[in-house]
Image (cartoon, helix red, strand yellow):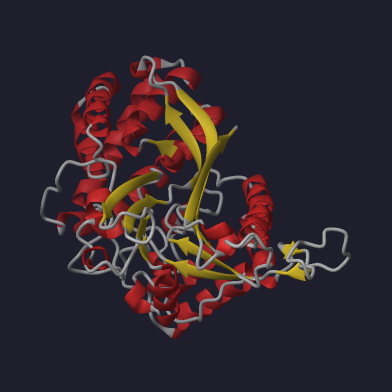
Length: 455
């Protein structure tokens, strides 16, 4: 049995809240149920699983959304995700952020560690009749092999070098990973372990960031920062800090605290709506409102003059993520209400057309074309979906090819569809996981997916 999770985005607490540890406890309960169900075989007998595979398909940890990137070094050096990764200070900064993430999310991470050690899942043994001996005091531990692949928020763990090996060793120890300290894979070709896993389950899986030009540079590859990194650090991470620095006590404390959740707003292009709504709700002083807008404008100007941004040297096509750059240019010259009108139109146009889906990219994968993969799995979009790609036979499973998106585990502040210009957001938490089976597990079932929300 293989369980795939992606886009958990465990952060260090400086830029929005991670999903609560209760989601991991719930996942632990479901993992026990899934393991028991998978132990029932196609012939109706019960044979307990000996192990479980779990794949973290990118952005499990999120060192990008951290205000520590904005803190200068002791010598005054300013480090950013796009700084020279060969600098010793770069690895030191990543170590600092990673350790804080693991500490901040210790309870959640411990669920994964206990799954790996066999402490989390255990099953009753089978009797001679091929049935579970439910009254037996003996329980069979079922350890999980947990594999970590990187995405666009945690690509730093793909960097080579001894300093980064040390960081990965700490992550492996804390999470109980089956990875080695070598660079965590971004593609299946990066790891013999991952290739064997995908071959066993007849699948291809990747984070999917390679299909998002705002968050992946095809020329530079995955060991390089992107415009998405710059926007996250210089705009989203910085905004609450700049308000505190420039306005001090004039900025209501509740406003500053709520703006720290900016990185959790969905859709991401609704960021100005969130900002406008928070300002209207928590700041009644019109002069302060104008100053808040001026801070955003000032930051936008600084962002556009960054050498890293200027070197991008091109406009990106207008899709859901790339609209962030349009958002920034609009905010320089428009009132928030004008931005709201434009973004509401953009959201309706793009989401109704289904542009959020990466399903069509699956049709171009070699593993799809040569039929070596029955299942294609991406993450990244945070949009869980199942799309039938092809079927070359009369039976539903052996010849069927299906695309899945693994969704997210995330705290959401979701824009309400009723009167969106009113800038109302509904908070809740989301978790999705995909399950795949081999041989006769789960009575011969091939896959199942689970997605839930709670508040």
